[in-house]
Length: 261
Image 1: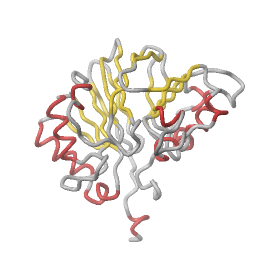
Image 2: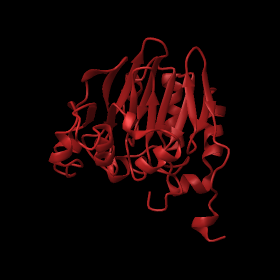
Image 3: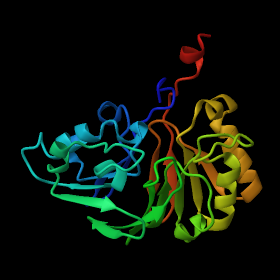
């Protein structure tokens, strides 16, 4: 996060009725504009937990969604820690910003709600923030897909994502480099074998993963599981219809700026 070698703007999901931003970390507003995604068209913001790399630009996007607070519109669905805080994390959104959206959802495990033409279910995650949650999305036209933020593997995790066509996992570390509360390539492979999505996308890479090469780690997962696995890149676009197609950005910054080479 502190180098922005791996950009932390989050994920944008678009459909005919939904313009949703997930986990708006540092740079979410600027990167949206850079990618030609008008932040004023956002009608939903989902936040998985109360860590800065997932929440930093939440207030900014709430303001753009509500036209500077002049129009009460849109949905904010966020983990309890984000809205109210808990024994470990302070709340990440001010009282002022919480009263701007038309609807605010305190997203807890097992909860279901709708945003436009999406049915969304909240699932468990195990991370340093005890209120961290994942999301499962059901659509009429494109089927189901899932997103798991920072989490370690735990029993029952894969049950929540059973049957999804596309699964997005936050895989901070490469194979053989575990860290409590986070996922490695080995964990991602285990989940892929259990869930069997059509496509697995790994994202949210730490420096060890970047130095090891996310593409290399994706190939390890695919070779082990037979599941087509893609390492996310800044600006990558995924279209989910009858087929799932990815369009990768043309240019990617290498490590030279950070490493001084």
